[in-house]
Each structure stands twice: as structure tokens, then as C-alpha cells.
Image 1 (tube, one colour):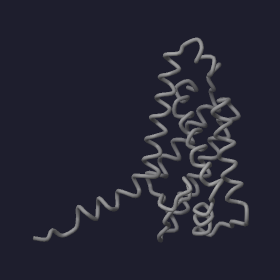
Image 2: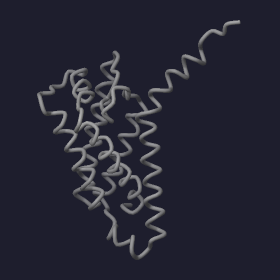
Image 3: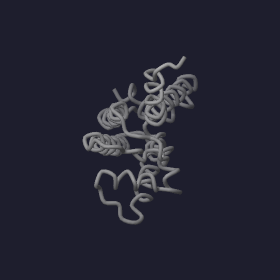
Length: 181
């Protein structure tokens, strides 16, 4: 199971790094997202959470296994719970704070993606593969395929989390707008 989950797991880890880095510089969207659902956000918490994302994601990329799998799963379970809380509160939440930008609102698809990324961490913790990085030397074509697959999963997850929520309402509004003429 761990070998099958390796591509999505590496994607989940990479997304943690990619989401955490911008928030290290400017955690304001994360802080606003936390406050919008009534969670405390004392000074420095945004950067601390962003640093944790980068460390967990980077560690998981360097050493995929039981511990990193559990940490990635925990991170995405927290994200899933946050998105569920934001969605249950209703109202308008402009951003979940995920990618350090103010235009990534939480959606049901966001909930599904973060839950699946958490599942990849659970699978890695449950049944980690043998030696991941030695595959690069022994089986370079297999390794290249794995990295390509992980990159594709990461790109699709990013699109579902950050781009789809921003274009879907526009597409719906434009499709239902009355035609002039």
C-alpha cells in the first residue's frame, strides 16, 4: 500500500512546502482565515504554522516513512477540520489562508482534496515503502515516473484548492447572466 501511496504522498508533502513558504513572509491571509472562524491567532502564530508546514513537508520529502506519514496525515486532517469548520459557519470567508493569498476560498472540493491528501499520509504511516530514494539509482525510469506522477498530483491538487474556487463562481455567474441583445 505504501508504494501505491508514494506519489500522492510526495505530492502532499510538496504542497505543504509550497503552501508554507509564502506564509513565512506574509502570514496575514492565514491569520485572517483563523480569525474569521473564531480561532485565536496571537502574534507569531501564522509564521509558526507556516514554518511547521515547511518542516513537515520538507522532512516528508527527504524521508518518506511512518513518522513523516503520520505528520503529513495530521497536518492535512487539521486542514480538513478547518475547512469543515469554515464551511459549517457559512457566511463569506474569502480565503482559507492555504497558499498565503487572499483569494483561495474554502470549498467542498477543498475538503475532499485535503481529506485525500491526509489519506496518503495515513497510507504512508501504515505501510511505508522500503528504500524510496535508492530507487533513483537502481531504477531511474521508475523513479522519474514516480516524480512525474507526484508532480502531476500536486499540480492537480493545487488547481483544485487554489484555482477552481476562484473561477467556478465566475463561470456560474456568466452562464446564468441574462443575455442582452
